[in-house]
Every structure is written in C-alpha cells, then in structure tokens.
Image (cartoon, rainbow, N blue to C red; front, side, top):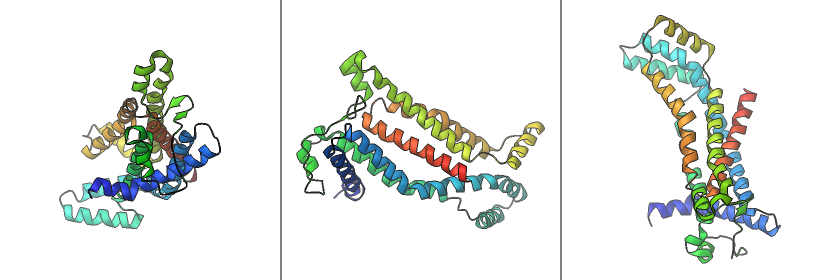
Length: 274
C-alpha cells in the first residue's frame, strides 16, 4: 500500500464519510442545495474542532510580537556571542511561556485535516469521473446509505464544475460564476488583514521603528523579510487564490470561502477577548 492510499484511509475517507452522512441527512429532509449546506456544516465542524489551536496560535503570535523589542536589545547586546544570545532568548521565551516554534507546529497539526477535507470534497464532487457511484459506495462505511445520484446545485451554482468550465460551456448565461474568484480573493484578503491586525506592533516597537527612521540607520534584514512576507500574504496570496479558484470546482471554493469566513469570526472573537 502506497503512502497516498494510506493517507486516504487514515484522513480522507473518515471525513468523506462524515460529509456523505451530512449530505444524506439533508437530502432525506428534502433541503434544497444539500451538498452545499453539507460542505458548510463540515467546514464549520472542522473550525470548531481546531478552534483551541487557532486561539493558541493567535495569542502566541501576539506575545512574540510584544517580545520583539526585547529580542532586538538582546541581539545588539550579544551580537558577538551567538551562544549566549541563544541562551538569553530561550530564557526570555520560557519566562513569557511561549515556544518560538509553536506557531509552525500548530500549522503542521492542521495540515492533515485540511488535506483530508480538500481530497474528500474532490472525490465527492467528481464522483462521476472517478468510477461512478459504485466506486463511491465501496468506501462508504454506512450500509444504510445507497447513493445513486447527487444534487450538485447550490444557490444557482453547479458545485462540481469550475467557473472557467461554466463560462466556456454556458457562455454569458454563466456570468455569475465570475463572482467566485472575486469573493474568494476578498475573503482571503480580509482574513489576512484581520490576522495581522491581531498581531500589530506594540507601542514600544513602534517607537523604536520611528527612532530608526529618524536616525536614517539601516533597516533590520529580519524586519524587512517580515514586511515582505506580510505583503505577500496580505495582497499577493488573495490574488493567487482568486485566480486558482477559476479552475477548481465551485464546491472547493465554497469550502475555502467558508473556511476563511469562519476564520475571520474566530479572529475577531480572539481580538475582542484579549
């Protein structure tokens, strides 16, 4: 068994079955757009499950930002003694109760879940191109579920096709599919903007930046790199995501937009409580 198949069994198929179970329940109740609502519900459940990780990530990022001026002072004080600098930095992190690698670890923990959700949606949305319903039935855990069709329309969109395919197939009558990349890009931009607002510079750090600008001294390469990364995440990444959403099924864009929307709500909740 290859690694890809193993990942499917461990991560993808359980979430796929949960998506199918939710869809089966909505479809049985006769709710229009059952697949779309199922995607929204599953994304919401995922965000609720990972909320403690998200909150910890935001809080730790804020603490790291507050420590930035102290780290800068240590770098200037021990610039010729790297070993002592590392020791003093770790002491500072320990006193503040943070792990500098914690943010990366939290992101890495979420990667398998995001991977599983993405692939589960992809399998479900493209069932007709992946061996049909007989192939899907083989990986369904629940014997009482027997799917012979899937209602793929949601709020006027076919969740199984991409905006580019819709435009080439239906022409001007599919103009509303052009809303997908704009909505996707905007929500990603707004989420990035909200996230950076939660880890904005402290007043002490702002004063140091102002003094540095007045003195005309060279900027810190680490700070320059951080600003470049923030610019790319805040502006370039949303444009990229919006462009990519033109080529992926609308159902995947719905998942990504729901993920961004719930992340914005989570970020605002954390900001309001802090």
